[in-house]
Length: 226
Image (cartoon, rainbow, N blue to C red; front, side, top):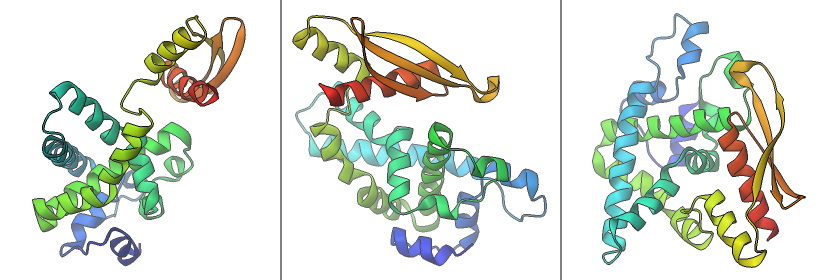
């Protein structure tokens, strides 16, 4: 594992390389590599999640002194959900450095995004332990907070299904409906395809390992067509 390339990409050099190694080690990797001298990253993920929420909360609190907590909560949720964190992780190619089992390495879609988001949180926790709160804060400011403008301009802080319903009722005078079009794969990795309909017309389809995920994806795609 060439950790130097990752450190260059995130603009942070670890004093304790063991922390970085742990942050990049998925639980599944240990199942196939029992001699690996590192723990999996779930404890760091737990810590990083808390650090991430605190930093984002502080920044939003200071940036929007007149907004009530409900609005700030929706902004924060849009910045720290797994979809956004996975996109942030892809910006510096975190997936290239993760240690995964052969099976997990083949995962795509939501499963891969969840792994990436969790690893981003683990990396945040590792930076916090290695360099302190200010270094973790700088990391989050550099990679997460630039997406705040996108969150606000695109309305990502609002639930896609609610937003679609609001727009279709206002513009088309109807309420969108959702229908499961197909279910594929074994029970533990089932993929649902859901269609969202405007009346009898299929507006968009979405895929996900849960019906709710597929509905949200379909709603997002339908919003793009309006």
